[in-house]
Length: 98
Picture 1 (cartoon, one colour):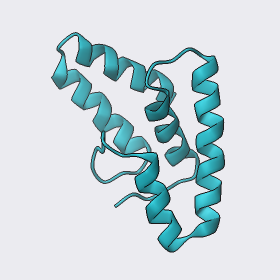
Picture 2 (cartoon, helix red, strand yellow; picture 1 turned 180 degrees about the vertical axis):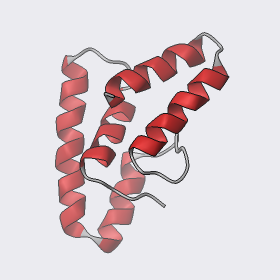
Picture 3 (cartoon, helix red, strand yellow; picture 1 turned 90 degrees about the vertical axis):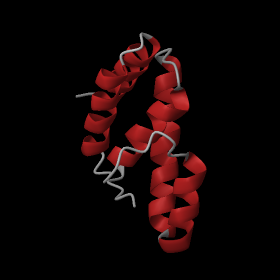
């Protein structure tokens, strides 16, 4: 399933006060991107710092994927563009997050 759609659904359910459903969607997203735990606070800076320490080639690959996903989300008129781009970039680059 498209991560853009899942992220948008999660936001809508949270706005409506349906936190249990929102949490299930976040869990599904987490599983899809191979994260061990749901990380709603995951940031671009965090991922870049971690990759800079270990794998500069993977860092560049992640940055390119993030930029592409960010632009696509912007053009699609989505909310929380940075979150959507983060999820998509993590998935596309097959990052294993701590």
